[in-house]
Amino acid sequence: MANMFHRIKAILIPNLLTEDKNDFYAKVISERTISTSEICESAVTRGNAPTSVEAMKINVELFFKEMEYQLKDGYSINTGYFSATPLIKGVFNNANDKYDKLRHSIHFLFNQGEILRRGLDEIDVEITGTGEAGIIIVEVIDVKTGSVNGRITPNRNLRIKGSKLKLAGDNSDVGVYFVNETTGEQIKVEADEIVDNKPSELVIVIPPLEAGMYLVKVTTQFSGNALLKEPRSVTFEKTLTVF
Image 1 (tube, rainbow, N blue to C red):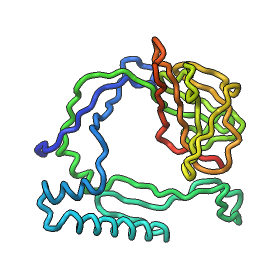
Image 2 (cartoon, rainbow, N blue to C red; image 1 turned 45 degrees about the horizontal axis):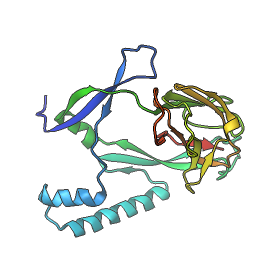
Image 3 (spheres, rainbow, N blue to C red; image 1 turned 135 degrees about the vertical axis):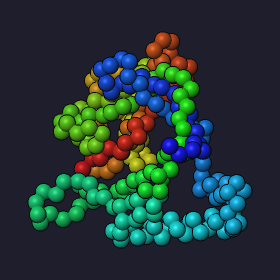
Image 4 (tube, rainbow, N blue to C red; image 1 turned 90 degrees about the vertical axis):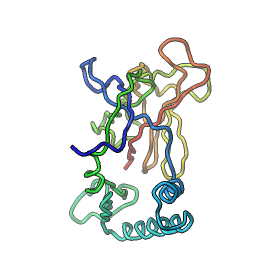
């Protein structure tokens, strides 16, 4: 086994996706997210990179811009650290069907590369304890199509599964929202469109959304005991698509 040079800290959280109440998953404890600028600064000050911070930042930005250009022309990228490839989502109705921005969408799929995979043996994991499953969305199910964490159908039901999702409290922000990834617009679900309101599951009627990519967000003052003074929100990490 390789020597351990790095350490990731994590806590164990109850796994809500299985029936076994003794199942847990590890949640990485991350102090914060660091930027490209901070990585360049660390590479020079810690890693003794033979360049200046500003020069490195410029070159990294140039690399990312060129990578974006090539991806937009349909090329796949393999840096060794990660690979990236264009991906088209959506259903084509027949062999002569054309790309339609209202029904189809383009994404870029990123995957871990060989260099990062080789470095996994250098990482140790320290479990620092256990934690409570706070407000969390674990999956969403489009009732009409059965799609899980993918397609959603306007004006039909959506099941939102997780923990501490119950809508409670008199703050005006409490509710379920669909956030348009392109415009940032937040479309709130009307109160009379909340079909089922439980801590472990919400069932709502999806608003008449236009075609596009959305994130679902739940805001509530529910905590399991007393109501929170201020609402808290959780946004599901997976993008949902309206065709």
